Image (cartoon, rainbow, N blue to C red; front, side, top):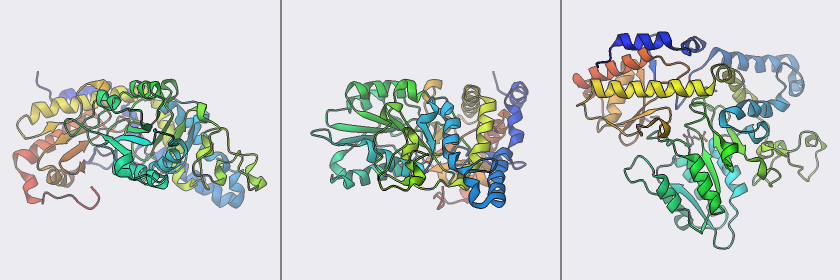
Amino acid sequence: MTITKKDAIKLDNEDTLAKFKDEFYIKEDRYYMDGNSLGLLSKRAEKALQTSLEDWKEHGIDGWMDGVEPWFYYSEKLGARTAPLVGAKKEEVIVTGSITTNLHQLISTFYQPEGKRTKILADELTFPSDIYAIQSQLELKGYVHEEHLVQVKSRDGYTLMEEDIIEAMKEDIALILLPSVLYRSGQLLDMKRLTEEAHKRGIIIGFDLAHSIGALPHQLHDHGVDFAVWCNYKYLNSGPGGVGGLYVHERHFGKKPGLAGWFGSRKDKQFDMEHVLTAAESAGAFQIGTPHILSSAPLMGSLELFEEAGIHELRRKSLSLTRFMMELLNQELPEAGFTICNPLEDERRGGHISLKHDEAARICKALKEQGVTPDFRAPNVIRLAPVALYSSYVDVWDTIRILKGIMENEEYKKFENTRNVVA
Ligand SMILES: *Cc1c(COP(=O)(O)O)cnc(C)c1O
């Protein structure tokens, strides 16, 4: 049966989450499909930032303990409110740092090479910054990363097989770092199974949740995951460079932070100003310096929307949006040279669609010119993320209609097939 625009309108009318679109600043006649790179600004996030500015205006230094949202407990409060999104206890989560700095912190904490166990296992499709962090952590411990970083190979260049990862969990592996959702293909890995297999072999395992937090539910604590990191500026809409987050399982509380700083102190001890650190008995121990309040504040407002909508409902809609998008692609653009390289099954798919095409770079430029914001990942992938909080089914319909026009009329040909500086 052919899908029509009427079907999209009907789906929007039945969508119980449709009302959340009004919470965001969305440009008229623009289709924002890049919320997996930088989420849009919501009115709540803007208000929360204004609150912190007002607290500063009113209280100066006393804003640390006074004001509407005292800054001294800000990161802990945000951690507790993020915990349900990652399936953790509230003390297991802290909002601090960025993905890359948190990786440095947690690898330096958990990577303790001993005897034959000296290697770190990752994969060949991982985001470069994660790999750079691993390489430098290996070198800081005196190892050559060419020998001590093991990267699981992909069979198809886009996805990973859990069997291959498990196969690579050899006796010389000390620590594993994997993405929850792969940034290019949008594949969701089986975190439960991988964690169980790692632990059977006595290996510490951590995940980078950059492309899953805010898009789908997690069960880090119940699965026994050792640690995790993420950013808050993608699906969680906390703004450019917004402060990130980390999780450490409670069984590791009391472990000495690899990178210590005074904000990792027990709160009541911090201002004793002693030269011996009394670390917090929580994920808070892995903070380093003074929290970046103005870059954390938008998250305080943004999280309200997730609390109101519910992450399970958001996941249901996200899967429905991406499924609808794939159906439309198959219907409208069967011969246009696109290959869908994200997994098709719901339980193996994250929040975005990943399309391979030889002309991907300039198709993205044509899309942008015609009101669609996609993103391009070198060498040949277009990512499209209809976001459950603020994308509608009609947005998806219009996006595919615009893409169809670009392909039929070869409108991409007026652009060069190269990436921009920020792609
Ligand atoms: C977005 C992203 C990053 C970016 O790291 P920052 O330190 O926040 O700049 C790192 N890793 C992955 C997998 C990402 O998707």
